[in-house]
Length: 431
Image (cartoon, rainbow, N blue to C red; front, side, top):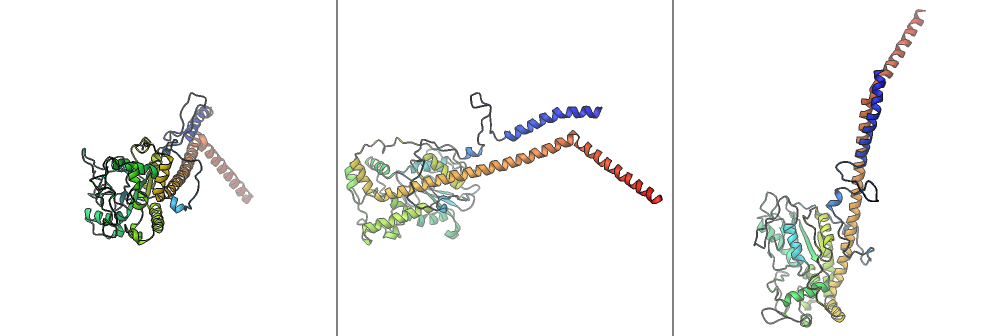
């Protein structure tokens, strides 16, 4: 009688436990996958778990076409950018800062907005920050706001690749060969017309960058190779027409020039080859160097730039990037004829930016697809784990609810049958 009563009690208890286990299976406590709602969408609302918060979806208001027009052939190797950056080891991140591409803002993100075990030490009133590796007095970042203009003001690819290894080894007192250190180059690009207008406004306010070295093949350009566009101390108040009319203005095709290997075209010696051939070589070199860089971002896509940087280096920013469209360049009203003239002066930059934009958006799409696959795999592994736990709980409930007693009764019955058979056999022998 008591055994029957225990079995009756077990049924509702088991039912309650089963419902609790089922709820844990659908909505585990540590995943935040559902919450109560009071609107018309039902009692529960499904959500992806914390993985999505690591790589938040960039703002939808950024200009991302639903279908990217394919002009260039990119391989999976071109799209897959994941750097195993050893901040504790010897790796160095090198920021190539092109004028008026949002590099100052991005450079500040690097020193003030990255989650690090040992954050950069930025003292109030000082332009440079100390970005040391954890436990070492060595810098992991080469940039304006960490090491300063150690290779010259706004040094380009040609200058940085020959200068950075020497400077960093000297700073860190390293005698190891260059090949033992990984230098990961990063940069920012911008729409050529907007960048050109922004540089014009900057020069109009008095900027010159005349202390830039422009080193190439071990020497700076001569006065004949790179004549100045103005005779005074600066070019303050220069009209846009005069700015465009200077043939040696480095604002023309600046992004291609600063990303290309200038030694391929005789540096600043314009007589080494035809203008057409020089432009072709420079553009091809800039595309190659940009494609092989560890990372680059676009000023027009701030949130996607943040997303791709985080995916590439496995580092996280503390605050989200902000898209600011109300720039000085945006406030400049120009005619269509002037726009065509600027595009003509920056034809190489226009071609490079189209190439860079397509590659950038394809890398973004590729990484989003990879992230979704990783999320599906993670959810499947969690579901399999919960199923295993579910089966374990059911087995424990079965044993607690009398499953063991039934097993013991079966064993006792089997023993009695064996004993009976043995007695009958012994009697047959005796007879």
